[in-house]
Image 1 (cartoon, rainbow, N blue to C red):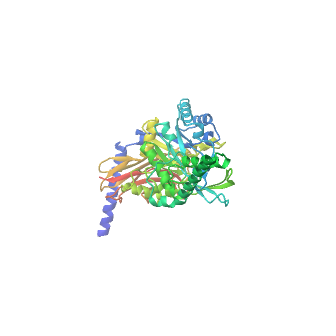
Image 2: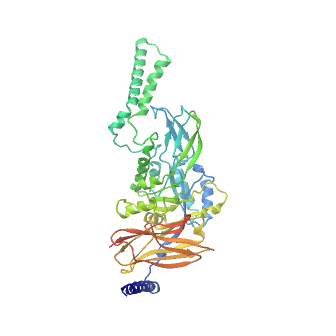
Image 3: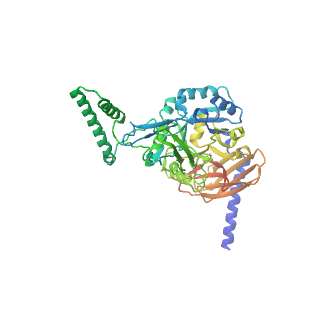
Length: 499
């Protein structure tokens, strides 16, 4: 009898909650995302400035004729690699240089995009950078097995206030801030110091020979000149804290750039973190060609902090962004106060070489902004008020509402926002509008890495979902995914924390 009574009371409580939700809906209590302007963004366009197919002018015209509201152009800041021979890495090195914003001119690049933006009032065209801060070398050119590692580990940077800030982004080209050198590192470089000392002594002896005999030969001139050149270039004669010849420098290098952008109130996202890349690369005077390889770097997204997030599409949802992946681990750390900044997901278009201009809608990020200005766009991205789609899903379905409610206080939180909650159940309102034919699209609501509810969408849908079993004493979050093994839509979290 007690079990029947318990089931009856539970059913009655659930019915009461549903009635409260209905009152919300019909009495106008429910808030709406209409307080924001929903903008469709294409992020990461490359022009011929750094290897794309189109000039900046052509790219602007393509963007202007599209149905985008926002377009962020991010050409490579530099496309230069250098290999230096031991022991004098700086003095004797071979560069390979390709087109980039650096060769085009930072002022020319940013001013050109700002000027083009004035001609297309329907879309906000924003200049940015695809930063290439670090790479590493493996092998040896003498043995013919030299490999350029991880040159395609990139970060998308935009939202900085000054062109000079982009020009000085930390990199192997621009240099990194110096840190105290451990004594062990200096000891390891004793062979270098010994060689440097011998070169200096040999140069001084050559000069003394000139003074004593009054006879100048090619050798007596070349030695002191080489000694002075090496002494000048190699200063301050200390080991590099971030070195392309030691691959364990990668986390420090990327964290340095992230902190630089974060301190200047910019936005910085990891680009294509799960992509692999292999190519033969010409290096004159060293080898005919070398192998250029880039391994997936999801671990760097997790290991680094203070970045704005990562590109989930196309190369970020195999493991990193899937429920239970490293993104969830990072968000959990943020909820526990172990991370100062929550990492958010964006869609990365990577539009550079195509004759099919429809691909401009293949991967998009949808922003909920308080206006259409750059400041409003950047603010929405900082707050995580956005979701992203791929496989043209954004052309078929629109998320109009994804909001969590505290039923006791009638307060609510939208995507990227935080809801204060007590011991009462939380109601989640999901509203999806179909703009075209849709068949059997599977969607799942997740609390952290726990699935709460599955929906099968065949058109427009509106759902209220009640979560009665959420944690009461810790911060957590909700996310909404489209797809199953092949994820085609993901929202950023709605956070919930105890009152």
